[in-house]
Length: 119
Image 1 (tube, one colour):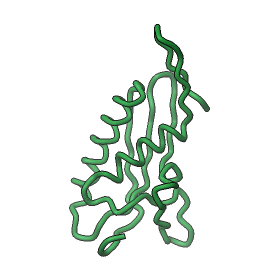
Image 2 (cartoon, rainbow, N blue to C red; image 1 turned 180 degrees about the vertical axis):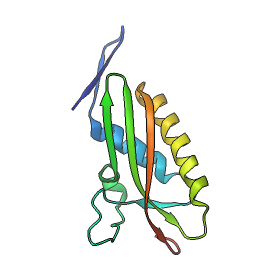
Image 3 (cartoon, rainbow, N blue to C red; image 1 turned 60 degrees about the vertical axis):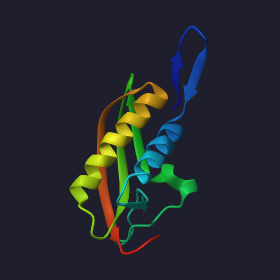
Image 4 (cartoon, one colour; image 1 turned 45 degrees about the horizontal axis):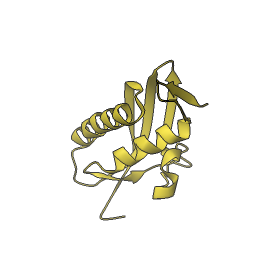
């Protein structure tokens, strides 16, 4: 569903996919994140998504002017998962709020897998 932001200059309409893509790009820029995983985990295997499908690993629920974001990520082996998750929460919250003007009420990080080496 589209979200409208209005001010004295005009109106801006944002779809949930746009917000999800912004959140997905912000998450993949964090140290320790190998990539985004699909929201569906089939047979316990997490599918690594390419850059063109980042929004498929993100769920956005907007109520009023507040957003709740759930991210499904794959982290690199040897990284401290709690620190990676904290960095993701901070970066996604800052990026979505500064880009869209929406307040981010909650960011949930689901680690779907751990990968060895580069993508």
